Image (cartoon, rainbow, N blue to C red; front, side, top):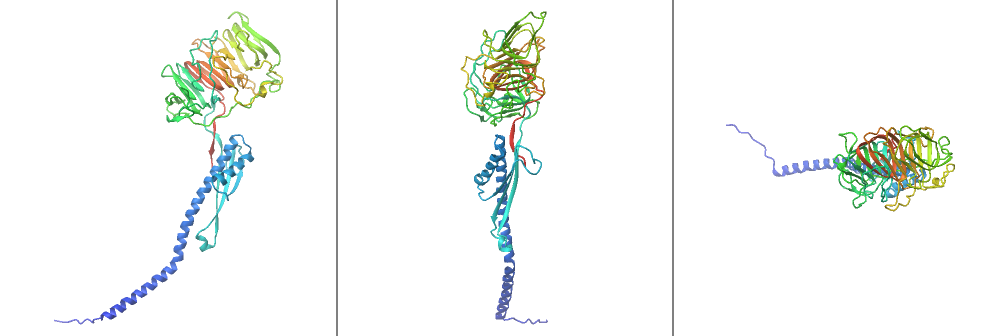
Length: 508
């Protein structure tokens, strides 16, 4: 056998060897840490400062968004650019807590796709903040964070066909009208806009309702101000088909039942939007008719009161000229209104109705009827109507109000078309009632035999309109409150809609 001799290392030598290697490694780690520590601290500082920078950037962008939106909302309310700028700055510095921020407001915007567009506001916000760690490495003690936002008004609905302006319509009672048969109506409003009867109402445009009365929104949740048995819009069916269909239904308050409202085009999403902001009067700038506002179509000749009861069909037509009338009543016969504006400033002493057309064959093409409750109205100066304020006039007592207009638009051979005068402020107007006149207007077309035509804009800012009938109306309505009483299906299809509802949107 062979032997291998191994040299034995004394235990004391092993310990010295181990200690030496440990001391060697410990020294290298310390040197390594000493070299990397500034880098590690720098990375840590970068992470912390970058996080703060992102947070500050979000805060500054939120403040710019809020400032631009506040400025655009102020412009939408009619405030001037200086006021809107102050509101934006106050919003950024006070409401968003950036007291030391620099704020630049451009009205209209100075750059981008909205540059120069009225109704839009551009807001730049700049904020300087201290660096906590990075300044140790690069000496930068502060860094700047900036953001930009643009907001303005844009269309939120289709062009309007029906605009109901009264936030809280007064109660009314419509008495029986000789020569016109209407279905029984509730004695007081159930809604600022009511759809009653046996058919559906289809509106090729937006329905905009400022009435604040409560009900439900598009989700079935409570909306508006709670009112017993009332809602801003109601559809009270006598048959399950009674519904309101429109391209948009925008309501300040709520509706009675969301299932009664549907899209104009079947299969589309619900058009209903409740709890919305009110819309302004789209005809607020329309003047009263005078020889100054429309010298072509206004005739100041006083023609007194007219009652026409001629022979039907065979009698010669009675021709009426534009001018100032005390009242007009047509019971029978053939009547032609010459083109122009008819100012009616009184009322029939027997019926107490200023304009009443209940029989005969009537041709009223290219005309506008201006109805005023002022017997002293001047076609030369517009007094006193041109002094009406925009404030809500007092409401009439229930049961005492008589209509100002009664027109049977279903008479055979009859035709009503609006003023056709593109240079006139009253172009496309058919009926214009004095703004602070709350009286009722009644338009009926309820016979299957009718071939009558009816179209044009009806404007009664604080009045109540009752539309009873069927078929298609090429009309626009701007009224205080309104009732559609559908004999069968009815369509509202204006050729030129009114302006849509606008909302303030953040666009950039």
